[in-house]
Length: 588
Image 1: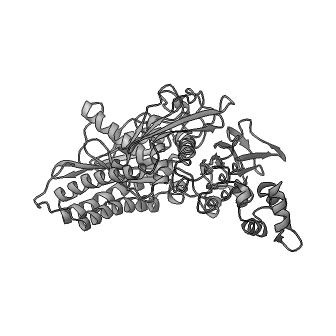
Image 2 (image 1 turned 180 degrees about the vertical axis):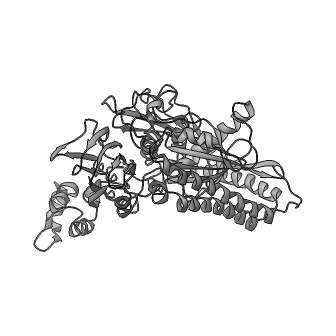
Image 3 (image 1 turned 135 degrees about the horizontal axis):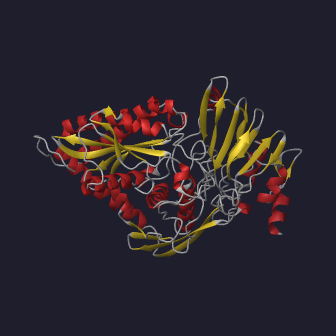
């Protein structure tokens, strides 16, 4: 850290260290809250598809991130801030002044996809950069061939939208109108972007104010020492957690349905080697770079491993130190290390979750009490863009959705949980109907979609919407349509994702199952999506019959499903388990 003041350093007793740690976390939480409350777009204001953090002035390493931010941004903002610092040092990007804010969405500079737009603001103390404040927000549109940016059949990044290198959008606190005009001239519904831009910038201003208060109270030296110590302790905690794993190599295999262009699955092959207190992740043998938009840039691949480990060991603080015991071999020559101009719109929202699934599938064997079966593992990205005649304006609607979590050693999987990569939630139906010309005919749990197991998987979501007026085109980039989320330790897979399009009374299923673009919709046309259920955990035949009966009584499974999935016979007249028949069935 840089920056000094006249206050002397004090000994870092445990209480002071804990208070500073909580204070840094609170700074990020307040930035998150400010961002969501001020944003115009429902995907940020309601779904909370955003994140804020504090990063090192030296190398961009993570210091703190908001608890309500997307975990997948933990790693990517670290790498994008590092890339910005390096470009400034090399003279490729102008050096900052106080109150400057950089904007960048280039996936190949430590990013995700083009819709995740990052702001970075240098935080000064006594004329020196003490740290960087950064945030990411999902913009509903950044141009490209389809509204919303989720082009299912793009073959180059230029087709996905406007790509911005790090440039100063705010110079000494003032918006650069020329740069902003360039952005607006390349995106749809540009008149609405100013609300999100100002909200994103305001969140960083809130962070600056709150961080100054902490430094004024404890002194720059003390806070700097606390940051170093917190990073050291996070590394120690992660090493302690890793020590629970027996030495050896653990393998797994996960699939992406297709790349949206070539209708063949992509393989993620993973070998995790545990030695002493370190883990080594090797993706050798995974599929080569693909033609369509399911390539993953390196920063997203690395961050996906980090977020998977956060799921397994949530007690380890969010800090760069937690990543130090994790060695990830760069997956060169695979679709997990995308280079320009490979398209990448599906990397953060979909491929990242397949990577996490591969980590879970490998480590559930040595850590059966801590790792779950596979979750739904898709963000359900659905975009609808068109013209609303009643309001005389264009619109771009972006819908994300939840799915079932995998069962685990302790309990059944969560139903309709958020995606693996974050805590963002689906925008409320009422908000979507108010903002866009759509009507939801169905928004319900997808009962029966959870994989069978001793602990069954959670259920997905079942929704159907209709275009009410005007004309529009629909696009979606989802996954787990070919293969359902993996069961673990004998559990069965969850039900796969399904999409059905109804046009003029005729229904069809897209060729790529969960990826398609430029689907023309007229008033009355509908789209129905059923998201995946989580994988089951453990042998279904060992599930308590009374729990199966409870699921049947609550209409989660039919009587026939109870017999076929769990081999449990239920007396439909009395709605009780027939223990003798169940015992005979299991004996057979």
